[in-house]
Image (spheres, rainbow over the protein chains, first blue to last red):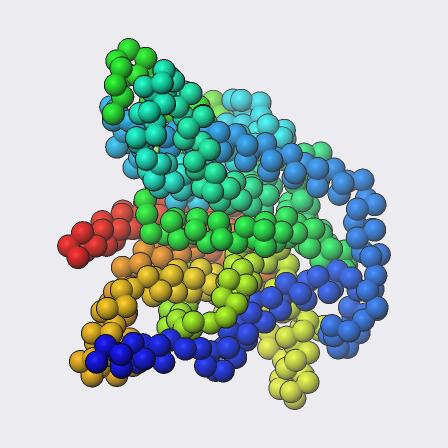
Amino acid sequence: MSGTATTGTATTRRATPLSYAVIVALAILSLGPILVMIATSLKTKPDIFSGSFSLIFMPTLENYRAVLGDSQNARYLTNSLIVATVSTGLTLVFGCMAAYAIVRFRFLGRDVVSGGTLLMRMVPPAVLTVPVFMIWTYELGLSNSLPGVILVYTAINLPFVIWILQSFIAQVPPALEEAARIDGANDFQVFFLVVLPMIKPGLAAAAIFTFRIAWNEFILALVLTNRFTRTMPVKVSLFINEHNIEWGQIMAIGTLIAVPPLVFTFLASRQIITGMTAGAVKG
Amino acid sequence: MPSRQGLNRATPYLFLAPAAAVALVGLVYPMLRSVWLSFHEWSIGTPPESARFVGLENYRWLLADDSFWISVGVTITFATAVVVLEVVLGVALALVLDRDLRGTSLFRTIFILPMMIAPIVVGLIWRFLYNEQFGPLSQALKALGLPGIPWLSSPDMALVSVIIADVWQWTPFIFILALAALQGLPASAIEAARIDGATRWQTTLYIKLPLIAPVIAVAALLRLIDAFKVLEVIYILTEGGPGLSTEILSLHIYKTAFVSQQLGRASALSNLLLLIVLVLTVLLVLARSLREGRAGKE
């Protein structure tokens, strides 16, 4: 009896040619538009505007040469890198400390902090544009500066990082921490030497999500930067609203912006999926 | 848990301090400022102290403004359409593909690529795809002898085009979560149904779907909250046009503030959007606790 049941389950779970056809079609749908961008970035102007779109052409790096040869673009790319890297670092350090406090300590105001974190995570960035612009410009003198952008990116990413790291910290066996305490470690040593090394996968997932949001962010950067402190997404938005759209160069910039997140995805897709699932299921 | 007093009592606050400081300056204070500003009239280029108190005037003006209600309509249509389409497609695909496929991890990696790309870049990609002269979609239609579609130039079609771009980017999110939930189901429940003579459809409809429904509800709410954050893709594709046909609320805030330079009104608008998101977040918390309650009973 159990034999037939097992066979039944095995049959229904077996992959059919149809399921492979569906999944391959989906992969093409997901990848297609991205490949169109990369292909267009490698095309000459006549190739782009010729009557038919084709994936067969003589590739050229001309568009990249034009984009990277422009010293402005080099500067904006550097700005993007600085802003994304520094804010990711700050968010991770501050975020994991806060998450540890929330998970491991009972203290006055803990529920407020924990609930506030969830609420803050949901705030649409557009809602922050006006007040942050006002405060940065007239009260803190941070507008048009990279530290100003870094500060607001750290703020918007913190709730997410705290939230995602909580589930990883909760999985660290408290006995390990107790053992370190008995050996004479203080709370900070316990955290940095015992807990942090145990949550490396969580930190990796959090780092990827944070970097991606900071690297991709647009609307706050648009409002808070000038022509010296602009980031790449802002640059490309200005570029596309010019009259003669240079599609080859635009797609080259688009590809440059897309490369870091794409590389991360291939390197750490498992952590990303863990992070996504944890994000939707816990908290 | 902390065994020693003294230092320990202060420890959680020390651990929280840096994050709290950043969140206070970068999130809490700006939101309070936004509430303050919504009761004032302030123009860019003058210090905030010179702002004039106008009471509820900004809110009154908003509620009487046609473009506000159009934007609310666009936002509701957009958010509903993307969440329904993404949930239906994502769950359907997960049910079809819940099998022992080879290469699953490679496929999953491919499916998350669109989500990882900058929204601004997604906007660029689709603006190129939708180009009516040389875009691949128009050319494909032409090759098939079909009439062209005014993807971004007709008001009705523009909203559909914007929705398609979002569905392309985010359906995989629901798909991956639904698939993970399906693969985590206890095999015993499904086997028991089979032994009782349930057909494939019955198992799906009465066993699998109800079991993964709580996860899907949470995922759908997360998508809904995210739909209210969407701005970049639409900014690049249509800038809210033609007319106001794709002017979602977050884009409307930006334009009211930095194009029309009505910052008080933009703040009032921001607070209303925040209120909507707040309500949705409370729903999310309820959905989660419901799910945990059920899990607890099992």
